[in-house]
Length: 522
Image (cartoon, rainbow, N blue to C red; front, side, top):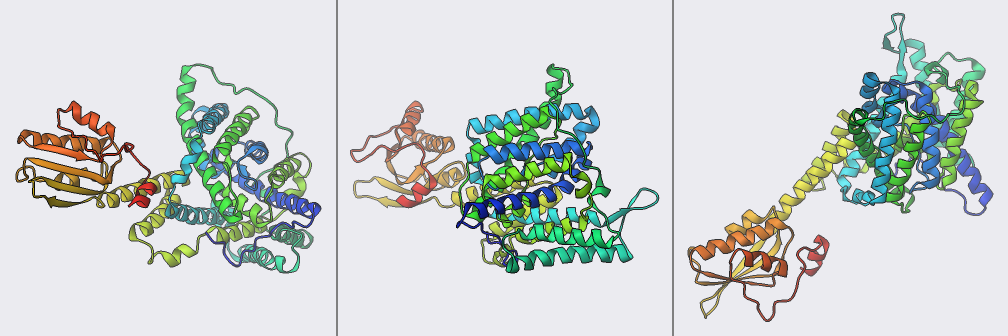
């Protein structure tokens, strides 16, 4: 995936550690500033106090920055998790949410221990393209809520007149600064320069536009340890377990996809299973300290990467800066205009969207183009995790359908009266019907040889298809000889009473092989 050419990425200087550390810390400051309104907005979605989201952003962000599988990633409270939490909070209260977050973390730790993170490699590239495109659209639409104001009746209405024009102007000014700043000054992250410049302009000119403090007060104290106040019984487990499973799955999918995206942008590698364990540990801790839980935040991770953040220091700095905002600098942070942060997020949208996918839609296979559009649409209408699952399922079905057509046969009738079937292609659940149609027990001679030299049996359905075929020949009193078949298949066919002849040139093969290995052999 290529980054949009007009969204510069700051590369940390390698000539001196001090310069690199400065870049990392400033990147963390930029991320922390952008985290505040996001975390507050997600608490409104989940129906909890703003500090519940801010504590989660601090704790989850700090632990994953130190122990996570991908330096440069930013984690915190996310909207994908918040939309699942709202029903639990409304029905059972916030204490059940904390218990759910603890159990969610335990499940994620188990996923890391059993190394389930490696299965993220099963996500095809078209799914990734659709995922980032849908994500960019979701981030863009989420920012449109900042262009609404509350009327006298307490209803949200769109801005009009001077407030709208001023807000749009400040958003465009922020975007312009972010675009132009790296051409003049590379020592300070462009998003941070945009936020600072626009904030100073608004404060000194006393421009009447919405500010962070209009969303909610972020002033608070240090989070304190507390065991969730819920009954420790079976009924509680039955209440929180379904939510924990969903939240754990969503959190891991979003985190691992973010890991892959950041790794691709920075041309580095990350540890998927380590990230699972770190996310789980972070959620267990945040559940005991009054946080709503969290996972990787793709938008903030993009801000960090584009600001030059490559080390764990940037994520650690972001978490510590956020804590400082809560404890001591809430009054100052609340003066930042929301328009400046919207401008930053709009630039993230431009850099996240895979613009190249629009150019290749008519060049890639139709099923890949369909998957890209499908995942984008599902991400928009549902959520990221559902979109990825749908995309993987559709891609797997398409793969199975196309692969099922690869099985073929070449027949040979020899002078001694034996008929040879030379198979080519994989035999598995998708190709068993075609496999059966290739044979004609009624008209074949009494001795038939099926050669599996260029074919492989991939699953139990393939074994059952061979058994059924031998039974068809046996009912007509004809013998089937199998060549180059795995010993496991022969055992199964022996149980069915079929004749299996061990040929001198019949080597040993495994019951199943990797698809890549099959391609190389053929």
